[in-house]
Amino acid sequence: MNSPPPHLASRSWLGPPIDARSLFAPEHAALMATLRGLPPAHWTREAVPGWTVRDLAAHLLGDFYGRLARDRDGHQEGPARAPGETLEAFIHRINQEWVDAHARVSPATLVDTVGVMGGQVARFFERTDLDAPSLGVSWAGVDQAPVWLDSARDFTEFWTHRQQIRHAVGQDTDPDPRLLSVVLDTFMRALPHTLHEVEAPVGTQIQMRVGGPAGGTWTVTATGPRWSLAEPRAAHPTALVRLDAETAWRLCTRGIRPATALARARVDGERDLAEAACRIVSIVY
Image (tube, rainbow, N blue to C red; front, side, top):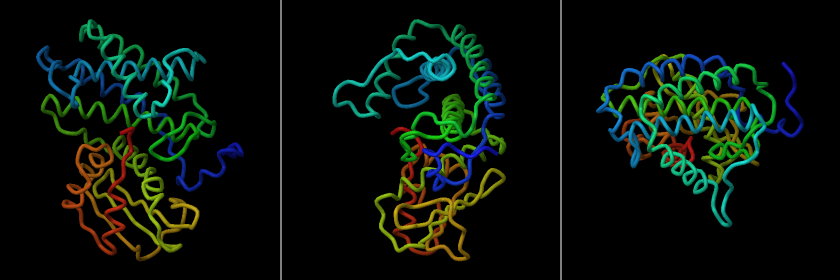
């Protein structure tokens, strides 16, 4: 494996790299199967507050176009942040502008265009260099992230929006562990940033353990300068939070509140640290 560029070498606290490149194609195929199976009445159901299924499909199309224009084609034009506008406000504004502009686009046309552009995005990611510098990931506290984190972040967004569409039309979360395991692994990279204002003695460890075939264990350690996912796991963490996979991904995307997740969790050790870890947010919120 090539060594990361010097300006990214300090990102080891994010944990080992994630390679989601081969999963964009099956994720896109699953999205298309979902969209093509929707009867006309389902396109107007609310998928997220303020957006219908059709709106969410249009938003995904905007994500596809933006990624290809920026990173494949080197296109630099487009909307810019207004004076004093926060990153979160800017992203929400341009997302809404895109969705509003596509109000006249029919579901059938959206399906066709999402199919073409999503396939191009999958092929683009298959050829990316995981160690190259890329966009920042604000919820991980990284202004310029390596491609492995930026691409994994995009993968989680595509997957999450597909689940929101599924739920809107009465379907359960897709349980495919190939996809969900990478989603959860990516989401947990928000833990060090989640805890950046939490003071604890060096060596303090909080462990998040998610059950099921897509689950895993993530241990974040207080190192002095920051919390880190790169330290060896101790036999007995200071706090341990056990969650099921459905609760874990919904918590990270604010589909449920931290208090709800804690009520479903099994917590061992120091509860204040467990509560701090459950404030995790792995999306722009």
